[in-house]
Length: 126
Image (tube, rainbow, N blue to C red; front, side):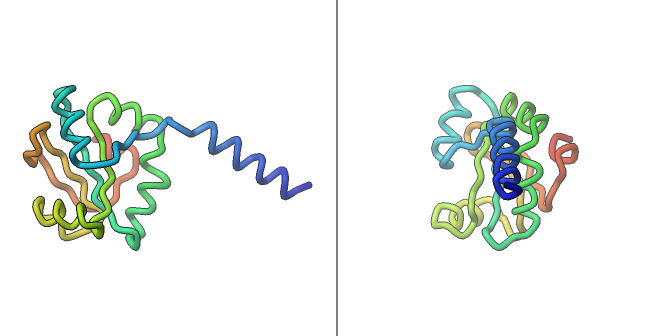
């Protein structure tokens, strides 16, 4: 019975937080297209599978409601694994050498800002 209760609590918590954080698009091309259509800048989280701070941000920062509210209103967002073929090309293009790296681009793909290191919700919004 205790296992069922724990599982049910996990499912309820997961459903309660679903959709509250940052909504990420699936590709660089899609991000630029949506950014061009909306005239919003692009936010790219460049990460790797083995990066501890990257995992922390994915689990604890990006799902936060206040982070989602801010980023979904102001940016087109993309998570980019730097070790995929597309990720390698874009990491080289934007000079990414540490993870996570947070890129901010205009809707044409021009780099506006680049920051390295993990952030909590408040730090990311600032």
